[in-house]
Image 1 (spheres, rainbow, N blue to C red):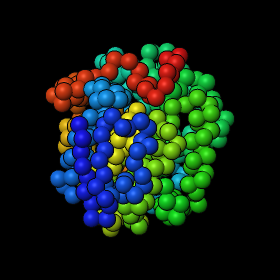
Image 2: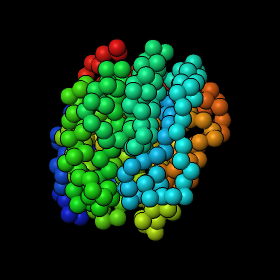
Image 3: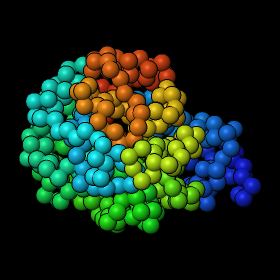
Image 4: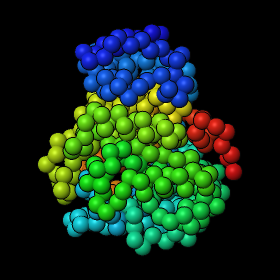
Length: 357
């Protein structure tokens, strides 16, 4: 398959699916031009991303059940509804039994990975997290952690307990924008955590938001280039959705079509990178179409129904009142309706051979 992309400021560029090996063919200039594509060109881009995905990883989709076990957070990020200064949110922490019961039920119905996610809870019991990780591994599932920034000893403890992956989004590759969004934090610090996680043997996930204030096509291209250059294992890309209890409450939402172009380019630049169908994009865009845009991971919420409404990073987050089994079955049906299939293994990164132990 061969596609031509035209842009007023760029010579005609021909790219074919066979050319893409870890993103080397596309320059930053070409990426910017493709981010600016019109609607017709966008769907050509999506078609190419589909071909790249099929050649690289096939039609498999990994279902991962996510447990949001604490919404306490010591950080004060301008975009996040869980930020420290939001005193309107009802805070909670799930106990050991509640977390394990949700994980057990999810594994029983077919999930092969459990994702444990929380804010940067200042009272996080790191030993308890390690115990939960170990229990889940013994139940026969892989574990992804998304718990924010901690010291190396915590990462090491969790890795030794059996954690396989760690998701820590960069949000923006623009150092000034990053510092604006995350007061008293730096992009350099964030990336240093990625390096520590990689050295400890984690599969590392990152990601970015589309539609942030002060963001440009150039900074979006830099987001993609940074993730490509770091050769991350997973990239979560979603639209910015303003939360009413944050300083960015009056900012407009990110553009779903531009977000889809980012996802498509991520697939083209990083053929073996795992791309989740982010909940934020699904909240603005039909999930079936997200799958068609070459996501290969979906993370349904398996948290207790009574706490889901309080893990509100952004408002109107897509959720379901169905049981864990009903939600799993619905996603299997959706995936199969798109001509894809649910993977039966742990869903480790295809970039290299990861041990299942």
